[in-house]
Length: 180
Image 1 (cartoon, rainbow, N blue to C red):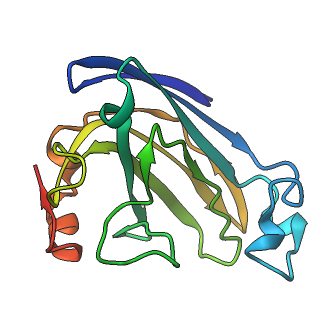
Image 2: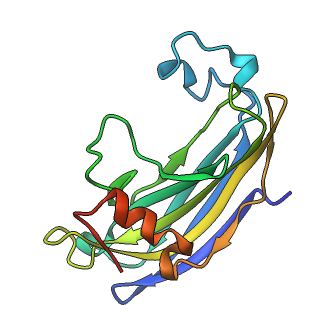
């Protein structure tokens, strides 16, 4: 099982590297799941993936402002994975200076099947003046659910160009943005 990968990228004239790590959640209390699920049944959440992606980048200042967009496919349907308390107008799960990506999905009540995330490191070419977003690197990760128990999928690099086939979904869900 491949749980770590490095994805090189280049943007704004500088090189960078995404270090991705996907591990099983051995302790849902330590990972903070009780903050989003107050009546947490830790045993039901055990084994689901925790994904982190950290950046190293040679650009500085405003050049290092980037974001993350994630598309999740589950049960044959795909959705843009948004943070519930942020604006649904914007497609980002995070945006800022050298943003670290984090996700810890746990869906023990879902039917058996594949939960797969295609996660894109993105830039707005002019940083804050437009609603144009461009993918610069991507990776895929997730899990298979069998009788409420997860089995982690391999993490791997994904071609970012063309949004890995998700452009129409992104455009339909976020018409104020242009996905190049």
